[in-house]
Length: 405
Image (tube, rainbow, N blue to C red; front, top):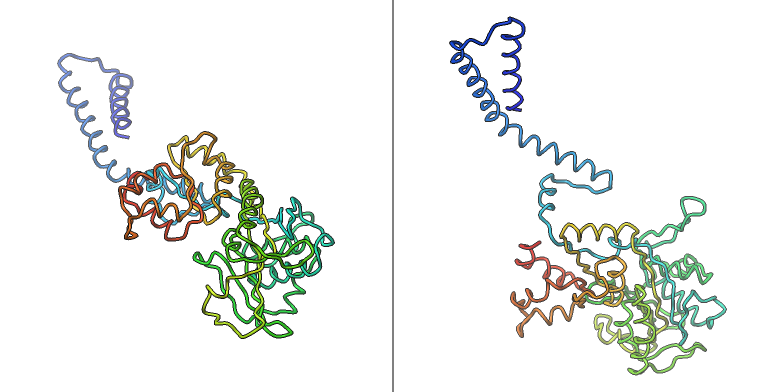
């Protein structure tokens, strides 16, 4: 602006004196002309001094406001303009998996029921009636009644999932088995439920207790497959009978069923139950209640990666930003999704840890985080699986991590 001002003043002076008035350049007038040019230069400096302190912040604010408006069109709400400047210095992103990197539309695509691994949804006739009944009742009753499957908004569209997406995926499994989950809930309304153990990061499971018509209680439980299997000592066979479920059987199921599902990026959920026919137990003693369960099924739930995610992560890498996945899912599932997203690539020498292993590596005998140990782990960490909120907080509050991120 100041240079433009000086040029305009000089141009005006030259045109007015030597073109319009047709004056000649006289040597004796040179000092006068120089004084004019110095005056023009001083005016330019004055404009620079006055305009820059006042106009620069305004220009920056307008630029940020324009950027925020552009981001709004991408459904990205920025409430504070200074957040744009802060994000410009970011060199690391810690992202959740479900709903962020993936579409958060759950669909059961595989199941292990009665000793058979179904690569596709089984037909109702393939299952013993009592097993089908247990699957349907366990899913329909042991889930939030606010979770529902609604008809598609447009003809030919996908059914709408309302509520918890994992539970919606399980309810969709019930529908695929040609069963009506609403009919089951009508017979067992929410107010009839005896007790509900809600899901949390410690339990990694949800359980519901109901009274049986013939007396006694039945507990339905669902949760992370490897955690649920450790609580089971019996399992339903292909005839629908209850047979022992030994440690060897559990290890075989993990190796031959759960790990292959997880390696395909599927979230594995275990479904189990237990009957209490004698004296009513102490419902506050969860360690006693959630042992000796009967395994009904293990299902593999697919949650597709968002189409735009791999390209976005590739852009982050080119910009020098490291993307880490921090999730509560199984480490094999998390690793498979991270590979699909581009967070991990074949041949990478990076760490994929579960929360327990992460804590073992960074804490001392007293359970305190040692900065030196943490500094050895986080630069190579790309996937943190089966992580609790505390694990996530421990990672992002590290001073070194914050400094370099």
